[in-house]
Amino acid sequence: MRSPARSVLTTERTLGAGRVVRYGSKAAYREVVELAGEPHSIRTDFASGDVALASEAIVCIAHLTDLHVTDAQSPARFEFVNREWQDPRFRELLTMHRPQEMLNTHAIAAMVRTINAVESAPLTGSPLQLAVMTGDAVDNTQHNELTNFLALLNGGTVRPDSGAPGYDGVQRTDWPGDIYWKPDGPEAGDVFQSGLGFPTHTGLLDEAAQPFPSEGMRLPWLRCWGNHEQACQGVGIVTPALATAMTGSRKPIEMPPGLDADIAVETFMNQPELFMTGDYLEVAADPQRRHIERQDLMPESYYVHDLGPVRLITLDTVCDAGGADGSIDEVQLAWLERRLEEGRDRYIVILSHHGLDSLSNPRGERLGPDLLELLSRFPNVILWLNGHIHANRIQARTGFWEVTTGSLVDWPCQARLIEIFRTRDDQLAIACTMVDHDGKGLAGLHRELAANVPWNGFDSWRPGTPADRNAILLLPRPF
Image (cartoon, rainbow, N blue to C red):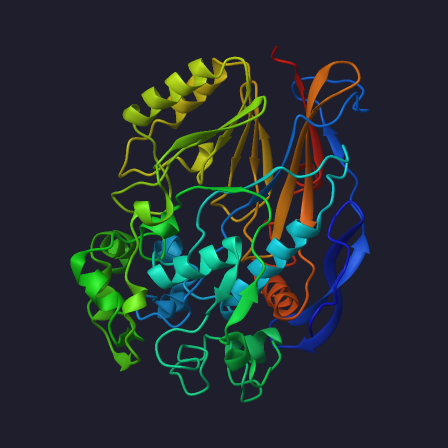
């Protein structure tokens, strides 16, 4: 079922679970329906007062993160690892496959289209000035994924297919294994259909693989480097052997023989190509699957963008030594301190892929506490925007707000509008409003599939609490 076009501001309408469409042996598959809107809550951890507006916004931006443009047919994806979902030793390697992943580009195009259609921010009525994308634009550090991401945000033709024409991957009806949703059938032929009630959609994969145009973001936009830009499946170092295999024709379908599960994550981080040594199938090779480097997306690894009275500082929190979580080193902290000193007369907004709690990679410099101490020294640091955890969360830090926005690839498939303004009693306010894309075409089906994935969908932690979504965050004015 494909959701109809709808209002996109969640203050007006929200989305949630509707009627059961189909029953499986373990769960029911439900449709996505419109529910009542969610008003803004007021967070007074730092200040309180009247939030009525005294003037137009200081700045209005859109926040997107963790888009995961995916080459769902790549030999360097290891979907078979999902069989180990109950084994905590494999936790950092999951999820290797999502039933909606062939539709990811359609959902992103819908969100780009939706943000373009937002004529004014909901509280101040001011126009949006900028979009920020805080990392994991792509899923698997591949050039063809990056090409599609840039077409989505800059405008152009998006080509979800790779290799030979037509879909050739784990969702194919004759692909070995029943742990993947196979929309062409047969009825109840996999665990998604038999156990979770997922439907059949004959011809969906071929439809999703067709090229389509994206209108591109009409706002200027900023970018961050994420662990999925850097590492294979966001975890493994791209070794020379893996780089060769990425563009080749050998698609692994089973765990490598003799793998020690106790060190599976460490093995994948250091030598991900070993996961290609088990049974395999031949697929069409594609040189466009070559891996990317920072300079392919980022002219600078970390940088400053000034927008009127606001200074946006983008950090690079990806650990070069592998692993999903982030780190930051002393060189970057010293650079950041200089940029903060230069920007004492501006409101400071920090952008990064990882938030404070996920700057915990043991393979890098774990200087998260040092970063927090540095930011806390500057009262004009008001906001830190990030992603990575694929969930909505807002936390009060030492003198500023950390706002984490969920992934577009996983339920609830949203972006966030940010308005910074002064209140009537001269406080500072940061208004956060969640945005649903319009749900047209395959984007609506993408959202419905994501909503029905166990532990990641309707009943999961990913949407956050109401205080993590539509919220007005108060601060004393720093100047």
